[in-house]
Length: 383
Image (cartoon, rainbow, N blue to C red; front, top):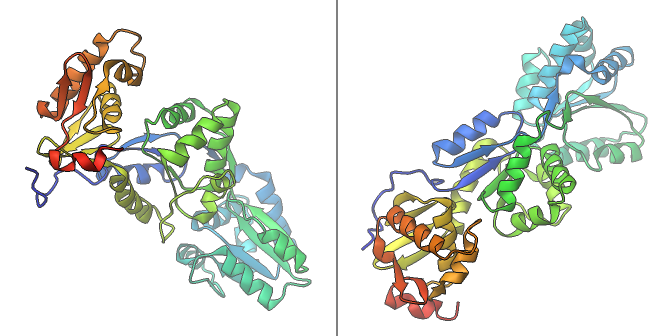
């Protein structure tokens, strides 16, 4: 029998495949996932235009130097550092820093605060929540009538933020620090979409709203949007680093999971809790069997299973203990055609992969069934 106390040698995400859409810090996120056992499919849904090439950033920088704003809001550490570096490259670095020393400088969160101080500046205030909503509340409470507010944009939509400031009487200048564009090679994005739609992914991660919007847009171009939304609403877990990132998905009715702290580490920890909790676990032939994305845990031991075998196992697990006819199993096999011999071949490989042949019983002339333990038969009798 299965020993509940035995310690698994694999990570909590072993047997699961996770899609990564990030352009920036994708290697870091991928490494965190792989260290916990996940297979990772990466397709950057965006690319970032280099700062020094951006004429809009240069124009905004010159305007700030010529007409110093009352308030400057720094929103991301990488964006703020990039802005200062780009200004240095244009020979405007010292002039920009001089202007920023004389304004009310607000930093959204500790990382941004670190970047501000590394530039030799001091922020006047930073919200404890790292929330732009808290920044907006503070500004509106202070009153913005007739004030010039410059905000370092960072590729994320800030719904209502600029509008609320302008409605309060502020003049708002956006500082576009880097620009998102579609990837030059769309191939990896298409492969990621195909994997999501075919349920070859167990989770899909998003670390920026533009990446989410870009993936949804590409799905729509290919006529796959309804299928992608169906996958995200039922079988593929959409995990976002925070609420702003989730907005494009929520606008289309997709519920996402998000960590309490908007960081990559907590995002991975959330997946470590959510994905094993969603896996089907059954007592079969005296063993504890947990069915994951591309592998099975048999008494805590990880057993990789070929795609055809996983298709059969999922079909059997939908009605555990019941006989599933060969014809139905044939339909579950990807691209198997009409030859029921394909079921026998895939079933033999599945049994070998599981390492416990008695988990699946052959019912002569009828089909196959999972050998559900008798004590639990009643629980699944009507399933």
